[in-house]
Length: 120
Image (cartoon, rainbow, N blue to C red; front, side):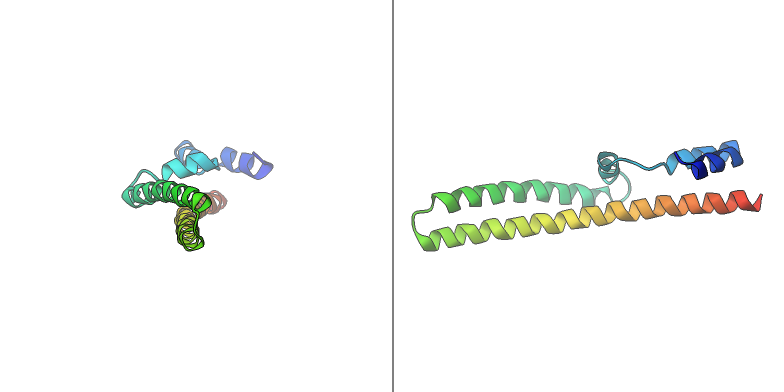
C-alpha cells in the first residue's frame, strides 16, 4: 500500500473500512472467478464453456490440418482452426472487458471514499 492508501484508512470510520477492504486491488485469477458469480454469472459461465469447446475444436482442426494429405482438405481444416482461434479471442476480449468494468467500479468506490473523507 502506498502513502495515500494509509492516509485514507486512518481517516475513515470503522464502517468505511469494510468498503476499503472490498475495493482492494485483486489478482487476475480472483478477478476472473468473481465474474463467475453474481446476477450475470450465467453469461460468464457460457462464455467460459464456449472457450473450452473452441479450444478443443481448434486443436482437433489443427491436428487434422497437419495430417491431411490433400491440399483442399488441409485448407478446410486450417480454416476451421483459424476461425476457432479467432472466436476464442473474441470470447476472451469479452471476459477481459467485464473484468475491466469491475475494476473501474472498484476504483470509483475508492474515489467516493476519498471524497467522503475530505468532507468530514
